[in-house]
Length: 455
Image (cartoon, rainbow, N blue to C red):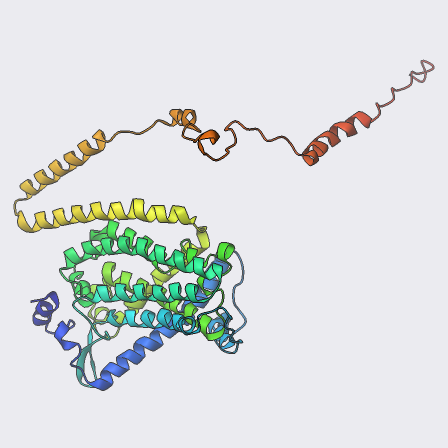
């Protein structure tokens, strides 16, 4: 019996429904939920665009958008209408079918990923008891990961089909980036599955009734936040569309509504991963303490406010990152993913699995503390036995010793102590002040007084 089925039997109000309730609802109710999710994502996208511009403008001491609509909040809607009337240009060298399919592959999975996110408890709608969630699966989190991964195909195909170099480089970057950081993100979620006992999003929310997983699994939360920042191509990890290096990246050759679909997919993915972080680590729609003790604020329709508030906090975090951090170099970005996040994630999984097994199998607390002390001692011994490596003082002596001589087929390399001679312009600018000083005449001495009276 799943966690939700137990809670539905114990809770007389039925705020949690079993997974079997999804798919057995009236058809009109399913259509209404799908329409609500679609409109919610569109409104959140319009809001997030203007919100990002206003927050970054405030950080840079600017005004931000303030012309269209009350307080400038209609700017994103005006931009969308403007893009719809832009000229639709298709490059001659583009692979036309794939070029037109790529924006759709980016936008559609972004909408589908949100379908398993619970944004409220069970409520009564026209006499029907239903959960405020479009649907749920026993592997709901994997569904979200699959949809976000499918969106990368749109980026890769857009770069390949454009018939240009810069979009192709952006697509290749995106492919390598998603492989690297999806592994780290999946490793961070395994600890959540171990504690929740399920991959269903609604059951994970129910498992956080007493304590949110951000307090129980802080390392998983940090890894997840870093990984999703790279997953959705947001600064400082927006390397597939780095305008300072690749003009516009994978969407350089796109205009009009096709470009707008890429723009829409990016911001919907931001909302989706923020909602997923809320679901996995911050209790989803559940009210924070002490508001959870108030029945009016933790049941019915009001928990939607808590869910949206937590999601907006994560959206603000993405905007804040863009405003304060510069873009990383690509090699440093990939090195950080493979050599830091993945090893830390693997060690964290082993530690969480050991602690989880010990707490479930060992009832004696003294025995549990003994095993934890032994494990900690083993870790200290392992770190003590690891060699310290080459000292920094020995590093300059080894520079240039591994170069292949030119006589053996090596490349010509300058000596390590090479001093570049100054340019004629620098010599002229350096000698100009000295010449000016030499050409200045000495001041004439004061004349001697002719008489004591004058003195």
